[in-house]
Length: 195
Image 1 (cartoon, one colour):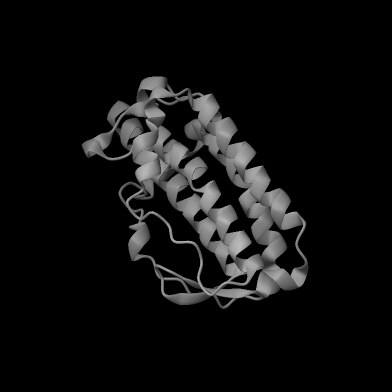
Image 2 (cartoon, helix red, strand yellow):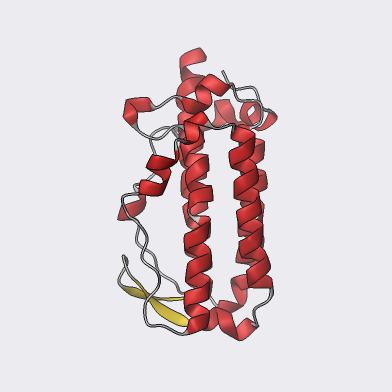
């Protein structure tokens, strides 16, 4: 059972709204980057807030629930660890934009780093602290850039489409929210069993 304040408030709503099993496959997502580059401060704020949102969401969860692997897929704790694992990619891509290459750093689409990290053997607090520290490194780096840097464009290797740095920030924020939604989905499945 999950008992955090966020969990108690939203559990019934999310179940009744049909939230369970509704999270789209990340690799099937399509992106259109048509918003103005001037939205980069908003996206920096959104990215900065993810560690706090994740901490609030998982606060009060029972440890056995956090490491449960439904259908041998990632556990809640592994989703949290995956967010920390990708921080080096997001930062590397920011550096790609600044170095002026043609193509962004390629992601490991098999997610070996997460699969090999054994996040379930670690304390959740340590995973969340690692994520917070790495995310603030990214935010600090972005804070030293000029507004014109956010309009630099490079090719995204998997999507095969041009992506401005501001689009990269949106992509990273959407990735955060994808895994937050997967965590909620897993929490709701457990809540539904106990209801």
